[in-house]
Image (cartoon, rainbow, N blue to C red; front, side, top):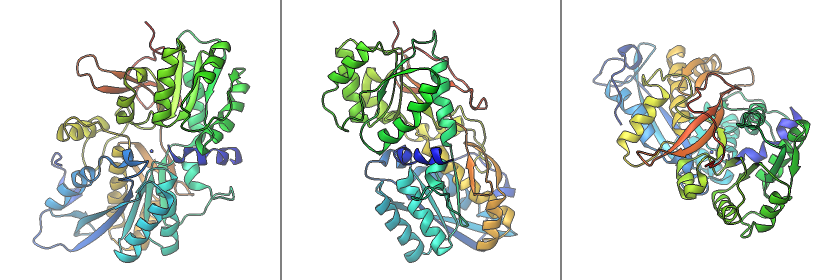
Length: 425
């Protein structure tokens, strides 16, 4: 587990109307509410992680609006109104701490949601523990949430977390490389910059790749924002690199890909994380982004259905993109939807909004959601599936599409296309 902790800092940057639902879930309309609960949702709306908040507050209204219009959520014979308040984390640890403090101490929310890398999840989690407020977090790799600065796992009593784990991430990357059509010559180029992500990803993947017998071509930890990649590209060419792995911010990936194309360097595979998780960033890459692979931490290929919406992941995406013309879904859409489902399910099983009863019910969660089955363990986290994504542009709609091309680690995540070589002609 210590080795897994080494990787957690790197993963910090890693992230309307519905159909009628059964009365047993929502309850019949009532002239007055018997109870209510307020969710304080800490999410990046500005700053470097704003992609993780693009569906806010559409998702909240899509989830909460129909319940309240139907009279509220049926909880222990009462009808509970669901309120929510949005707090901008600004994509920073300090901003998320300030947001959670305001939600807990000033606005007296009953439950906190936080999502979007450790910069948004970890400070709210710590504050919820301090002030004994129930908290549901996601979109941060489990180990990045679980371990403290001392490398030891934290003990949580009030916070419950769900997302993918580091061991699955490693297995997924190795598996995708082994699944490369036609194989490769064993020469792997590294694009790991001298920032927390690059340093730790290199320390995580380098020994793993060497253990597989692959030969790294490592230019070292270069400065983030490097304007000229020609020396690195030439080294890749001399080393006959056929697979390139890395963790790059969108501007750096765009610069690199443009310069690689100009230099006539085209490997058989790119597996790049960080810049490749969101469609808006991929659009900015243009044609150079086609066929790039990355971890798929959610897409409609995931199994599961929403108990409180009645839709699958594809149904949720269709609903969002239909009501928000021209926009693309992003993975946090599903994790926020699932967070609400986890809360509503716990409320109904608790039969009360009493804090102690709610916490006890959360601990026993075993629920199908659009991100798969959520079942918290003794350390109060649930490991969710992941897959291997590859990007393309649909020839008819001209929209960017994320295919799930690798599912050996989690076969429940449907494979939607075969893996392709990078821009093979």
